[in-house]
Length: 217
Image 1: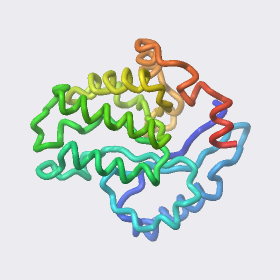
Image 2: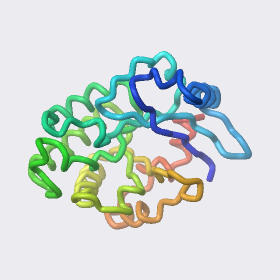
Image 3: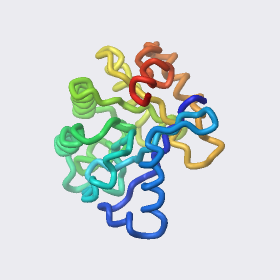
């Protein structure tokens, strides 16, 4: 490995920074937003939730890699629609670098009417999100953990948006979503999927050192 991005979850509205060790963790990540340790470039970042109210942006401005994704515990299943979810992403495009695992949790919106099916409404939503990423130069994340456990049709949704992103020439990143140290940098399932759809190597930032240097120095 030549690069590693540290993107632990950012909870609450920012007041959590004053509790426990959160403030020290974020200060450290900002301090080494882009640094090199033991020959590995460390990229400081965090993962946010799409409908999250973050009121401490001034404490996060130095983070070099900010992801935002759909997480079920932040969704109101009764009132969240696909259109509302898209609006959240459209607003988020001005603050984040990456849209993370966009295929997840979609079975929970629109009062769960879609279930695990790849409906026409879901397809339209995913196409709109890919086009938004292209327009705003947002990177889309292919998440390894999404491929380990196919929850409610997430795998079919992933293949759908990935094929459309390939057609549109959108940059993607591959994330291990490691919740344990031995899973860092393990992308076996993601690599299989990339080979299956013949995603261009130069459009996968993990494989493109010139692009990584452009992004992170």
